[in-house]
Every structure is written in structure tokens, then in C-alpha cells.
Length: 170
Length: 156
Image 1 (spheres, rainbow over the protein chains, first blue to last red):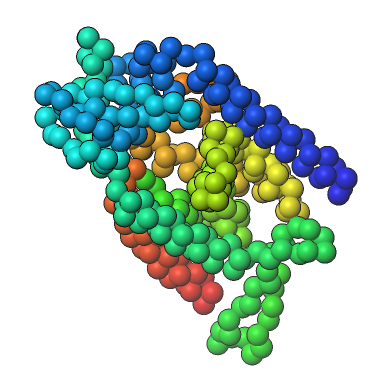
Image 2 (spheres, rainbow over the protein chains, first blue to last red):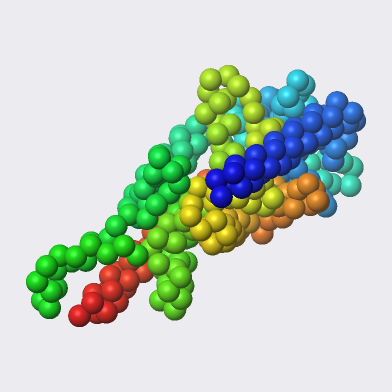
């Protein structure tokens, strides 16, 4: 039984490694071969039909909007975003927009990515991790000898009809 | 975005509701479902690695697609006595995670990678939204008190 688990574990681990390697390898290949002037081929800019989503940093302004830079591993791409709301240079922003007929990005919504918001999300997730550990470890414990999780024994509270506390394994 | 509080509580709440009807969803198996709800976010280890200067986002991103999450669930289920049952409960937890993540506006999730590069998203909440956390806490509290009352009623 243990041998079977070991074999399955090795197979699953290999499959995960292959999946991750394939993604990383294809991702990098796509970056090297793409035409960077084509917005729809930029892997760092998400496009769905005419909709655009990107994480960028404001670098400059122009008459109709802002210019943003998007880092793409070893290179940087610059895009003009048409928007009436100007953001200060250096601000990290999240842009939701559409591609107009002349290949211009028109921003529907621009969110500022603030450090404090990111820290707040990480803090909430940390609380979530503690919550998970409280729930999981209340019912399961790890047997290091058999290298598997085992159910914890449960204790039945005293009830008026019971004289003694009893421990039940469910 | 749905943080881990939301993921944990939504998974737990779902199991508590199902537990009123199906005895398989006891608190032991609910804990496994809650574990499953966090599996897709294992890819966020790239944040910790990034702090020490190792960039692995491109490598670990597939953990946040269905196939990658199920493979991780397969490995985790090997550490339990009932492998198949544990895997199914972990898979349920994984599905609750993606149900919440599909509500996001974040460019979409390529759920079916490597079979398809199509990205899916409903796009209702932004990545910084915490209203869903508040709602999940509220629902979980209500369910907790109902669960306690039902259990106390059964024991007498």
C-alpha cells in the first residue's frame, strides 16, 4: 500500500512539474517571438474581444490621457491610455478599458494599486490561514510514524443522562 | 479579491449546510474541503520567493488552474487513509475556490490550461473588494449558531 502511494506521489509530482515547465517554457517562448507593437499579442496585457486589462505604472501625461509602462520580463512596453482622469507619474494602476478602432486604449476604469491595499489583502489572508489551521487541526493530526493524517479523538460532553465522560473515535 | 478568510468560510459554510442533510459532511470531512479551498492559492508562494529574489511566478501559475489544483489534491490525498474519498472532498473545496475567483475582474483565469488558453471570469468584484469577506463571515456566524443549536437539540 505504501509502495502504491509512493508511486502515485511520484507520478503526480512529475505531472505537476511537466505542467509548470510547459507553462513557463511556452510563456517565455511567446515573449521572445511576439510582435511587441501589437497590443493583443502582449502577454502582460489581457485582452478579451475589445476589452483590455493591464497592470501598469504611469510614466507621463498627454493631452487626451496618460502614458503607462508595462514590464514584460526583460523589456518594457509603453501604451497611451485615453482617459479624462489623470494619475500622477509613478502611480501603479490597474486599467480596465476597451480598444478603439484606431488601436487606442480607452480606459473605462482606472484603479490605483496602493501598497496599503496589498498589505491589507495579505493580512486578511494571514487571518484566513490561521482560521484554516484552527479548523483543520481541531479534527486532524499528523502521524509522523505512518506519514499520514489521522482523525483526532472526540470527547463527548457530560450530559445529564451520562455519569462518565467517554471518548469516542468517529 | 476573495481572500483566504472568504475561501475558508465559504467552503466551511457549504459543508455545514450539506451536513444538515448528508452525514458524510461531518466536521472531519468539512476540514478537508476547507483545505481543498486553499489549494489553488498555493501558487502565491511566488510572493514569498519574490521577497528573497527568486522569480517563480511563470513556473507556479499552473497551480491555479483546474488540472494543477487536482494534481496537488491528488498528492495531498495520499497522506490520508481513504485516498479516493479525501480526493473528492479536496476537489469540492477546489471548486468552491474557483467559484469565488470567477467573480473577480482580473483578466480571467485560464481554467482549462493546458487544454485551452481561454480565460474565464464573470467580473463582478475587484481584486481589492472585501465585501465578500464580510458577507462570508456573516453567513458563517449564522450557520455556526444554527449548527450548535441543532447539535445540542440532537444530544438531548
